[in-house]
Image (cartoon, rainbow, N blue to C red; front, side, top):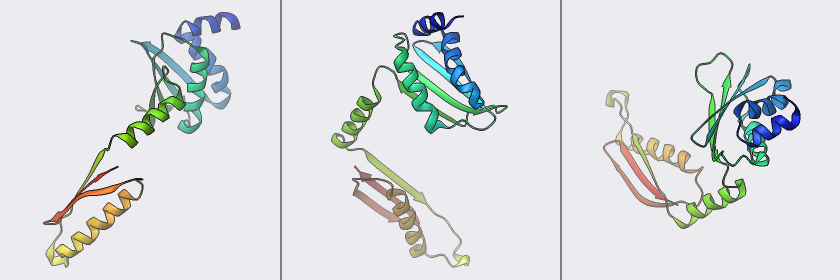
Length: 173
């Protein structure tokens, strides 16, 4: 296939043409792209001797497919897999109908205007012969909860309950 034919076929959603265009850029890096299409969803499996970098390849795939403008593709599922492994090391799904900046704005809007409850339930059990007391359980549960919640922003405590070595904390952001 010549370059104009590959590009034309790729714009029409031809999976072999899309894979060929991707592989032109990926093969020199030791990565192979396998592409399938079903029900407006393009599935891309990226395989290499080492697990392919999700941080580098997702923007590459997104930018390339957006520029391609294949109207038949609505959703893209990308998998990164080490050659010879049965299951992918990572996966990412995105919608080609929504630009990445718009998607982030929608996500930001959803999280700021609609409070989302977050429940952390920690069940600890131990042996009193080992010297663990209910105060020890409470201290451990509080530390675990603090560690988990330190990664959340704009969070306030809605409910905290600790009983019988079990800590349940519900937060809302």
